[in-house]
Image (cartoon, rainbow, N blue to C red; front, side, top):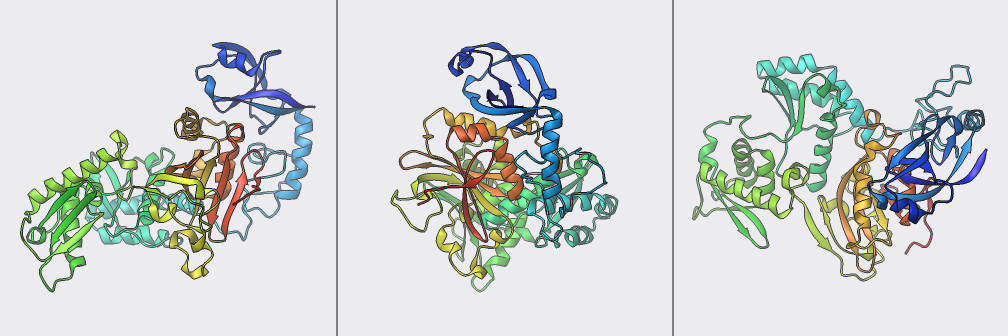
Length: 497
């Protein structure tokens, strides 16, 4: 056994430092011969001699190198420690099966030598929203023959009944639409122009999990998407007469004015118009434009359906351009907005966020939650806080203008490269919401956390980078807000304001 060995972390892999080489010399090198500490039958920062291999390493991004201390054990030493933790921690977990042997197969990738397993789920413990979503799509995959029959028969009502009887186990019923396009069965989760930002992001999450490369529906040749594209559905021509409106774009935003005669229900009229616009320009473009709807009894300046649709398309394109989304526009919420605090300390702000001067978010009703909401009556909590958590990373020493932000973004954006990353089991653990910058120094990354345990496991894979930058992780759920020091162990952060 050797403890406290000098090593470095680079692109999700660990290596021992070459003898006598400094960190500066390593970062200046193009290629170097190293001992690669593979995470095979072990978990960083503890490794086994049997998984060490010598290789030549090419260093293309030296700014992504972080120094770290590691420990080396024989396989027998490592397993002896791990076995004690397994016997203590694993009983009672719904994933655990005691076969009466000393076989540790599977435990090396799940439990570290500190005895913490972020995949443990007690038999009476509720499932996370992320895991419920994973199981939901498995069950939908078992119904594909029935769903295909509904699509072939044009029976959208039965299709929705079959899907929602599974969805209602953990979420509200939603609207789905099935079609055949390009010779493939397609399933669309339909949007609603009256959605809140949190509902929009939640429903998009559900659809994106079904569209993962590892999804059983994708494996069966199906397409899953959130929001109908244009041209999929044809509505009753009678809607044409009701579809009159105009779009007004100013520097402060876009407003859609709908013609609603005196005495008519404006919501019913808006629903009909949205259905028409979803057909003509697609649901995403319609949602972008319908973020601000204003009913009016005046017909002045109102356009018929086709001209109105062209205006809506232009408004949606302008929205995308303002977000600088390029080809990534499907990842931007119609509710995306910038925000800022006055820079003063506010006792109602969540940990560290009183230092947040300006930011951008895809879901303002999530990112702008404060302690005042958490301190109120539990029944008054936002609905989404009972479904999943809000999480954010705070980097106290990273300024907006520094190159370090690009390093953080690279590591968070390439988690699939981590040896212990298991997308096929975890689905999507967290969803990026936006970012913010501090009034003095500091950088924030906001996320919807769909599985709190897997979120911490994900951050553990980034431990050397997070430790180097002094990062804090904050998880906000229905029980309150908890701040952690980031590393291999997530200890409560001290010195909170």
